[in-house]
Image 1: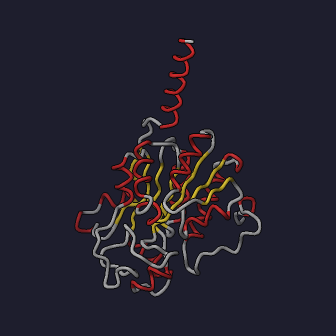
Image 2: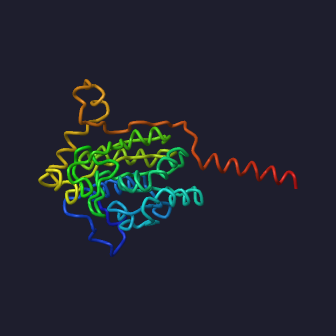
Image 3: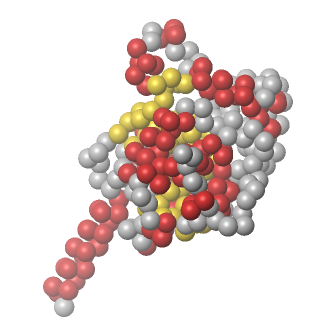
Length: 277
């Protein structure tokens, strides 16, 4: 029986704005299936986004949603979590939104380990705003701002998140869909800052410039370039060139969550002050 997405969709918002061949719709459906499996109450869910193609996703979901400024999804998400810690908060950004203009907010959210799930939709380009190169554009790939090929070294988002202090870091792709469903479920359930880098295809501004004939070619590239973590780790170093591992890459279930620490501190201060009165 086909999955019924309609209970999670906001009426009057479809059809979506994503280009033909864009894989954001695949990831969108994966997220909805994960939320359904978790029996998530929509009134207790907040979806927050910044600016870009990925930022339009919350607007299609019948839940508490917030479309914010460029690069600021995590600042708003942090405010929601601090004000209403009982809510489940999911922030979503593109690679540029999260690691360029929003890069400082990204690393400090990781450092705090606040209980927010962060989805970084990585399509290696500024898709909506003109095809400029982003911090994740591979070296040699063309963009509107790197017409002869990108010369800037690119970020590994997963390593960046681990280095900054996130207690759960994973990577999935729009090709490996059953695995992505499981990754998103585990990330949302995790207590602390969860980062999921989701590899996506942008056939319009990235694929056309970089010799991908169509979106299918980009999906097949994902199939060949990303391997389950266990399989990746068994390969000799010379066989891993140009490939990256998939799945849960790092998890610390004992890391202190920020809201718990903060509210314990404020409760202690309040008790101290009341004792002096």
